Amino acid sequence: MNDIQRKPPVNPYANKAFSKCPLCTVEPLSKRKIYEQQVCSLCFNKFLNRRQLSYLIDGFVYTVPLAGIIFLAARSLKNLNLSDWKVLAILGAIQIVIGFLFAFKDGFNGYSPGKFCTDLQVLDEISGRPIPFGKSLKRNWVLVIATVPVVGTLAGLVFFIKIARQIGNGYRVGDRYAKTRVIWKKYQRLPCFRGAA
Image (cartoon, rainbow, N blue to C red; front, side):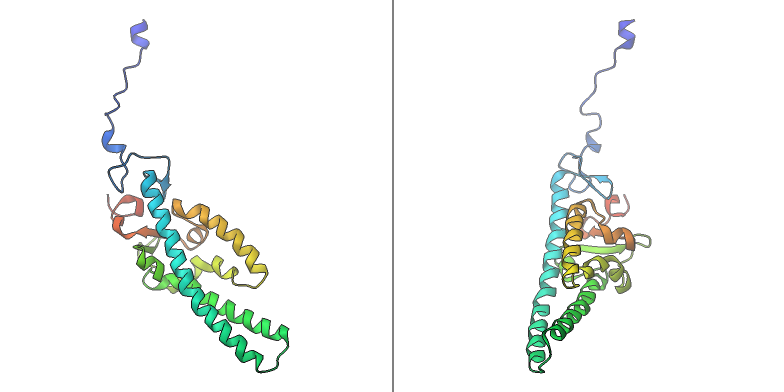
């Protein structure tokens, strides 16, 4: 009776092929997931770092011209003898308009400057094609909020913290809303990024 109830010993090598990361095929799987697919910690962190670096590059490409435009506009407006409130309102409007331009950043065949440099691309979740400018705006509308003076700064900080916690897993706030997916081009054919197995 005791022999019947005993479970057979578990063979640790039985599922060896399935215990490796589908991206690097070397490291063992961890609890980390990209788009609900288990991956190793190393690949998870590489994907996360690529997305963060992509955003930093895009931020730099956006911020440097914005600072120059704001500086030149402020100097020009000062010569018009406008009140401080009018100058601030005009500069705020310029900042919001340029913020909208930043939201279109992923519309260049699914690339932004940062994504192009880091081998990432944004695809439409349904069609699997690179997103156009309209989808880019829909995906990045949250980032435009941060450009609104005073109120936007606080709201933007909350969104950036939320986004920073989500991007390693794949989807972030704008991706769910716009039905988009950021893929790592090197692994675009793998199921993790919706390619063929």
